[in-house]
Length: 61
Image (tube, rainbow, N blue to C red; front, top):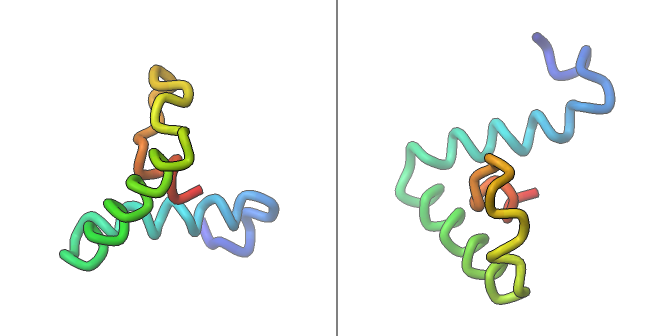
């Protein structure tokens, strides 16, 4: 499905695509680790830990 046809979900879809693609490069992994570090420093590391969403995706969003 094309992002333009997703309407309001397009932004979330682009974040999810970035998150997936980041797992395939060293720079991407580094960026995700930095986001997770910041997420935890803001005290969000234990936010809803059983919701099924990976912490890296939550940190990115």
